Amino acid sequence: MRQRAGMLAQSIVSTLVLVLAGCSAGRVTTPPPRNGEVGVQDLTATIAPAARIALADNENFLPPLPEPGNALPSYPPELLAQRLAPQVVCLRVSIDAQGLVETSAPLVQPPDCAAPDAMTPSFLAAAQAAVAAWRYDPAVRCVFAHGPRPDYPTCVGAQETPLAVSLTYRFVFEQQDGRGSVRTMP
Image (tube, rainbow, N blue to C red; front, top):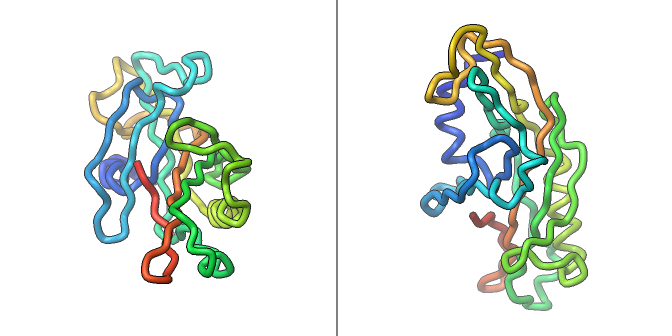
């Protein structure tokens, strides 16, 4: 696998909203996105401890890195005339050990994520169609043969094992001046 230390540091700022099993619990929010990039928020505190990856003292976890061509969903043009209020669609996206999206499903996480029956079906379909085409450099478990893991995320000098993980994304479908847009929110 390629060198990931520098890429990871850069991608933490530009990665979409994600939930990663094995990351430290708690909630971290980044500044608002710039230049079309999206923010990241660690929501692992919402994942049951039994579902998280347990890391040994000699292991690191590197989250999946989204490929640059991963496009956001498009606002369905047929909904523009309805002048709908902004709507949030939350998806849990399962990524396999090769970095391909296996599945996506609506995620209900009040108050930020509405129940699927409260979502406009076209928004849900647009979000699922977009993420189905996404690709990632896969998540990796790094096992260091000697001593504890470094204090920074790296796999340099470690045995790398690609992992399947789930990420959570929140898409906001909105329109302004008759034009639809989609953004992510932390």
